[in-house]
Image 1 (tube, rainbow, N blue to C red):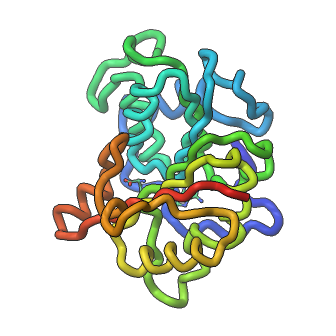
Image 2 (image 1 turned 90 degrees about the horizontal axis):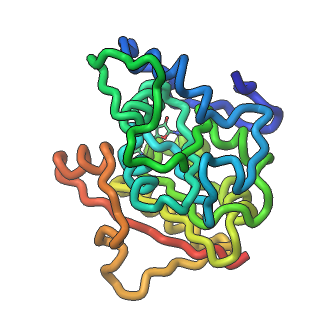
Length: 244
Ligand SMILES: C[S@@+](CC[C@H](N)C(=O)[O-])C[C@H]1O[C@@H](n2cnc3c(N)ncnc32)[C@H](O)[C@@H]1O
């Protein structure tokens, strides 16, 4: 397992484990994840995927993995790196991409479901531990969708959008690459707008007063977005161009 701590990286405050992971999902984690996992020895390059890819996208905190799984299906020439600390979420992504459900009997060999390209690799830990290994100008796009809002003032230093992480994301992204942040939380929306306004490395791509209030054309709904909609909160979709 990848070292959970590195010097200078603040503690991770979210959940790593939730409900017991049962049956098939637990086997997916033990038997199949190692094939897709970015381990300490994986060299990050365009050749790390099972098929040749033209671009690389990163999703940070993919949750249950619906967005990542669907984007990877729609974009077979893009290699996707998904980072998620929460083991149940990683198990869910594996279930989506293999087609194996909780109660299914496991086949002798676990494989990606037949319509899929082998274009996802998983970092099942805190993305900040991977940053140092990502080469400069490596990424074409980064998704940070519904990050934990940590709305209390005293927890503001836990928010993912902060000057250090923006600096790293700008370095890892190509010039002109896109950082997409979505949130349904008022505090986090204002925080993000302020942080990015103060950051000379990114430029907001919004062209009119309202476009950031509508889902982008390539959007895939996530679990947290559906939860927010059920509870009457509408999300905003903020795309920033890396101008370093
Ligand atoms: C509020 S959830 C949103 C999940 C998903 N993006 C969605 O929209 O349904 C935030 C997720 O980010 C993950 N997360 C938070 N900080 C992270 C980090 N530093 N590295 C990797 N994952 C992280 C958490 O474990 C959690 O699953």
